[in-house]
Amino acid sequence: MNSSFQAPVGTHDVLAPQSALWEGLIATFAQLAFRYGFTLVVTPMFEDIGVFNRGIGENSDVATKEMYVFQDRGERTYALRPEGTASVVRAFVQHQPTTPYKAWYVTPAFRYERPQAGRYRQHHQLGVEALGTDDPAIDVEVIALAWRFYQAIGLTQVRLLINSMGHDECRGRYVDVLRGHLEEYRDQLCDEHQKTWSQNPLRVLDCKKAPCVAITNDGPSLPDFLCADCAAHFDAVRRGLTQLGVDSTLEPRLVRGFDYYTRTTFEFVADALGGAQNAIGGGGRYDGLTEQLGGKATGGIGFGSGIERLLLAREAEGITSDLINRTIDVFIVDTTGGDVATSLADELRRAGYAVERAFDGRSMKSQMKLADRSGARLALLVGPQELEAGEITMRDLRSDDFEQAQLRVAREDLVGALRDRLNK
Ligand code: HAM
Image (tube, rainbow, N blue to C red; front, side, top):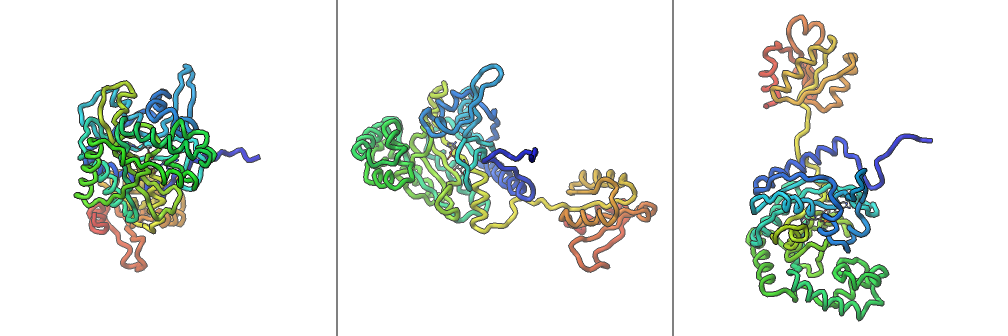
């Protein structure tokens, strides 16, 4: 019997070189979020289950079917975070930072879903939340940040779908009419929604099965039910996006999967991914969520974007550019026992270079092989001759011209010589 372990079903290990893309995505997002005035927020990976039940809605698919719930040794019931928003809002209510409070995060999220390409049981999100203002300008800022991020990582085939769910009253009126419509056709709905249409009619709009799509297409349309204030808010958001050159398409069926959404809702679809799991990001307003979690009424909006799907979308668009440079500058080949490599590596790393070396007293040949494999630009060779002369042999690993490629440098001149060779 094979006794070694594998990563759990629906999860993935990320190793180099793929992990350099993760570093690049996160660094790009962090930089952009900073420019837009967002600060990093870190919250626990698990919360009292009530944070999510009340936050995302006890009837949502995620809360009923997908949460990882456990009891700790003190018999408290916790859940692993299935998404980022509820935790950030819980922290906002707890700490009451000055508003507008604008925070970004990078976090794993856990959902017990049926794994397939682009859908995992542990995925990772980059996201932002902005709390404390109802101004449509913040909606525009949050959506534009996502859009600029997708541009920055090279994606070109992304569409922004947008809708407004209104506030409680307009949505309530819509849900009543929708429920009436669904009741009329309830026997024709898909199996699942024949059971649940009445409890949560909005979920039927999200259903991809043909009968549900047909029945809801003929039904009432959410934007027609917006009150004057919600309609004006939505107009202002769309005008703001147009002002910035961000194209959006009205999608009246877009209701998203959590109960906390009010007014603006949106999703970014990567067309290169085909039909399934093509949402690379989504979000919206959640003006009632702070109250649900015990705080004062405060407007909020944010989005989350799945790192795995962003990378799949880049791949599907054929984008191969690096997002961050992770090339090693020099590889030290020390055949005098390793002490020179130890001090030289330290010296050069402090001077700002990316340095690798060999261990375990390997032969010259074996160290040169490692140097080649490392992708380093230069090898620095130290043998008994160099040691005695106080010199280093510098070899360009990317050059075929042996004469050109090799150069002896005095140890004290090495940093200057590297600067010339590497231009940095
Ligand atoms: P969400 O649409 O559930 O929204 O997830 C956001 C993004 O995470 C999706 O668009 C997708 O890219 C990725 N994602 C979701 N589930 C999976 C999965 N099982 N496997 C791989 N990727 C996945 C939220 O989570 C909200 N918290 C977004 C938000 C922030 N709304 C307001 N603020």
